[in-house]
Amino acid sequence: QVQLVESGGGLVQAGGSLRLSCAASGSIFSVNAMGWYRQAPGKQRELVAAITTVGRTDYAESVKGRFTISRDNAKNTVYLQMNSLKPEDTAVYYCNAVGTRFWGQGTQVTVSS
Image (tube, rainbow, N blue to C red; front, side, top):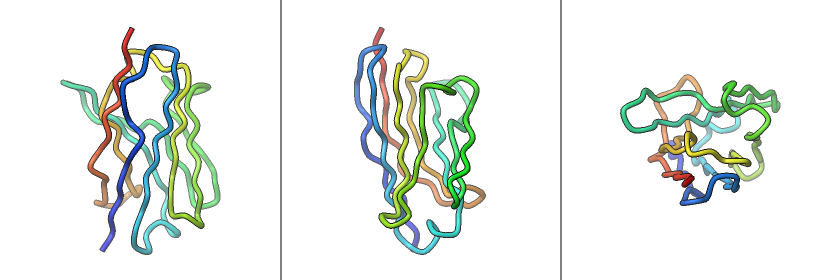
């Protein structure tokens, strides 16, 4: 049984930082790229960042230079460090094992202006 559990969301002022974590159970973590997605009210879910099993990363243009994705394979955990947050970053953030049906429950990030 694969489970992905996100944590670390919250309310922060513009310019602030948050660090999201996604802990994975099951064997999928070691063989899968992992991604962070977000969905704002009234908008489609979008890819924010992804990381392969060997650490290659990719980012949405809107977060390049501000967000950093990383993974700790020993802890089966993927992180998203978010700096210089903007109100438009407000969304529910989801963790996903890329290409699979396995998603976390989401964590709310709210950035106030």
